Image 1 (tube, one colour):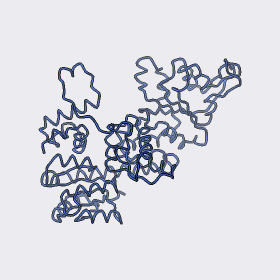
Image 2 (tube, one colour):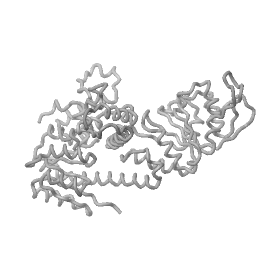
Image 3 (cartoon, rainbow, N blue to C red):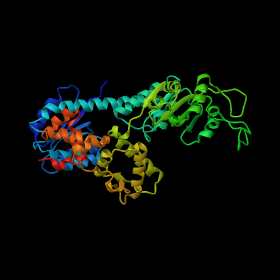
Image 4 (cartoon, rainbow, N blue to C red):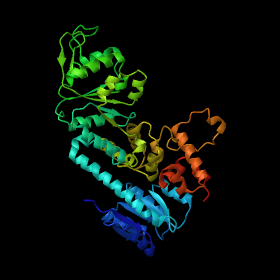
Length: 465
């Protein structure tokens, strides 16, 4: 049974709040509460009430909308807040989005049309989050304990992991470096019937090619110089359990053939040995390379590819996981402070959280963890500021302004994806004469995304209020 969406309206205009309530209650089951001031809402949120969605007026007596938004981001950073104002100014909207607002609506222009679609989006996100929670409960705490996320891309990963444990197919985990491939492999092993058996990890990129065969299959005493005793390979070590082959794309062609043969019949010989051995092993492999491209280029055996990629799982990059960045941030900060209890409690400022969401994270989750742990050490007081996040490169979290397009040079220059995004936004925003709605529609993205990108790429300098 669906849990009713709880919506808070913070507006000193009771008549307007009544109109919004009427529009939002067209969908049955929503619980709506009206607060006439930011102070009243914040007091209630701290005491006994936590909404799923907030509509916040910009101009109110006492605590204004922007200050209320700042305090909400500090105290309840995961609750989506939609700013509502009688002022149709893009600069104000940019400031609100920069402070963490989910969206910005203009009274009498687009508010009554868009409040319900926004509420539907939040309802869908909550349903997705609850689906993830069900998967966690069904999978058990041990299996999913290290996998943190509530975004749609991660919900897909949880779903695939939940299915992967039900059969003994070979799993291939793909994704950029730092996305958590080994964590996924561990989760699959922990939920499978092999969980009582060993989980053996081999980093194929860290072992010289001349030693890899011995690493896989073991060797007999005297098989080669330095082989002073018999040694079991990882296939023997993983018997009855799971063998995780990380960076599988680094294997040379000769070893690929031997690995394929072992996977086909489950039998192998130690280097220098004559006895045929057997091992009951489930293979999970991982790579940050395109194995399909390697197959096409002759760098990877096609038959081995089909043997390893029986059940592929693609991991998303951190920048595509939205609010998971903040969930992971809070987790890493808690864990670091727990391990170093000599440090005073710390929290991240609103500006620091905004910076984390805006950064592209090429190193993904691994880079985020390093950033948070370093910042916790650098922060002097109880608040981690934006400057603490990028100590080595203070300007790293700020994207450079959009450069003028040189049409003559463009034809001969290969653009990065980020530069292409900047230029696409600038072009669309100009053609749409600064209209955010039209820009969003033409690019196929949301209004709030347009606002965030305008801020990210420094285009607010070109906006006329």
